[in-house]
Image 1 (spheres, rainbow, N blue to C red):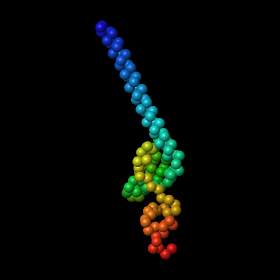
Image 2 (cartoon, one colour; image 1 turned 120 degrees about the vertical axis):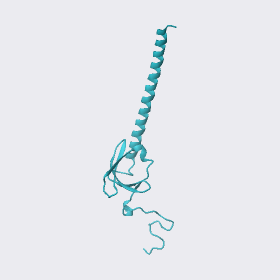
Image 3 (spheres, rainbow, N blue to C red; image 1 turned 90 degrees about the vertical axis):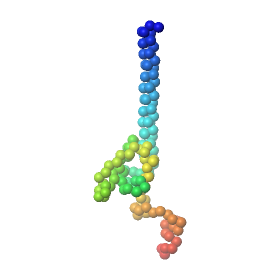
Length: 130
């Protein structure tokens, strides 16, 4: 087999493999983009959290304010150790479902309330005189 034929066959095979690799890469990027946009839309469909809500992040319940809710990411301002809103945190929307996010309800006076077995339906304890 002449060397020109081998070179032509190698170029054809490499070209096909390169196009397959480029196609696979494009499909993977497109899939990730579609998933990211879908997760962003799920944040907007629910009314659980809105811009300017004060929420508590993580098990340590660190206060944070939702500044912006975009299609791809949500931006929080968090308090530093001095109590000032100096920390900015941008979280991809697909990561929000893995985070512990709590929000105070107005009914509770802006404070968390954990029901115990002694609490009745109105939130009063059985031994209270209300």
